[in-house]
Amino acid sequence: MPTPSLSPADAIAAVLADRYGLAVRSMVQLPIGQGTVNYRAICDDREVFVKHYPPGTDLAAEERAIGLSELARRHTIPAAPIVANCHAQLIDGSTPHAMSVWQWMPGRVITVLNTEQCAQAGEALGCIHALFAPLPESAAPSPEADAWLRIDPAGLEATIDQLLGIIAERTHSGTADDFDALAEQTLRERRAMLESLPKLIAELPSDLTTQVLHSDYSPVNLLFEGDTLTAVLDFRPPKPFLISYDLGRMAFYPNTVTSGTDWMQTARTFIAAYRAANPAVADIDITACARVALVQLLGSLYGVKQHYLKPGLFQDDLDEFWLLRHRTVTVLLNHLADTDQLMAELISTPNR
Image 1 (cartoon, rainbow, N blue to C red):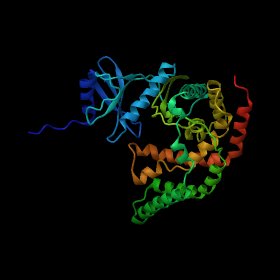
Image 2: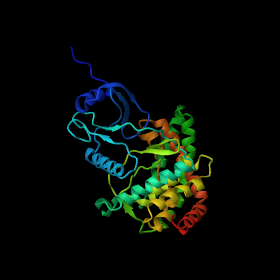
Image 3: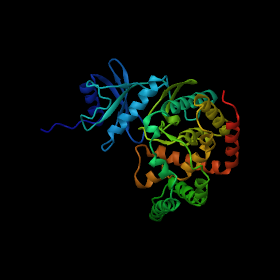
Image 4: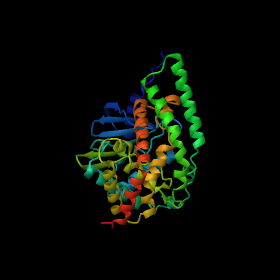
């Protein structure tokens, strides 16, 4: 009689026992992450976070990302300690369930930060950028930045038309739902907004700084206990990219801009704390960060594209994120002069 195959959770628990010496008492899949499947495992002597990499993941690159996290942790940035397996490997690739295991960190994700949380998040990112700036990889060229600065509006328009065609077919067949109506409206609005993209890109400075970054710094990768930052999670592999991208993405995060709070003051608090922790940052990278954030959001169909072409692990979250991102584009386009003025005020203020 054939042996029944294990569920993914049971298979991962078996690897934890065999390769990490961890006896799992319970395992819960977490509703977070789009690139990996994540679990919280309660073991006899500890709790751990398990990141399961899907087939085809570049595990060597992921190991370099772990190296960045460990470097940050050794320099007092609150990052989760990695748990090596019994063979001192940071990633266990001995089975089809490749994984990394991390110490479970206290705290929770807060998508809209208060003033103190925002200041701590800005300080941590400033420390990370200052720490990573001297790394050899930071001096390497950044093909990713070059490609990003050549965003193709025509290609985006073609993809929008493809998505609108799918929605039209669903409407014609009577299978359209409420999200289809929202997606159609926002996609048509985005198509019209793309007229401003070439000018926005052309107006960006040509000498923005690139270096190794966290590369996924956002509220969903930060944990807080009260107002205290307890963990910075999910560092990405060390490929140089635009400092202003890492900075602007967090300072003008969609949840913040659309929350009804004073998002301009939030950005001011975050960037001021960042500058204090990374005084070597060039003024040009500060002044460009709001526009870089806008260009990134305007030139991205993340969320709605997955909905119609390749659904993500938690597509409902991606649907909501698309709507938040689209609203943020509208706000930032309407306040472009205001964010420019804010950046000018920030660089004119002496670092404390």
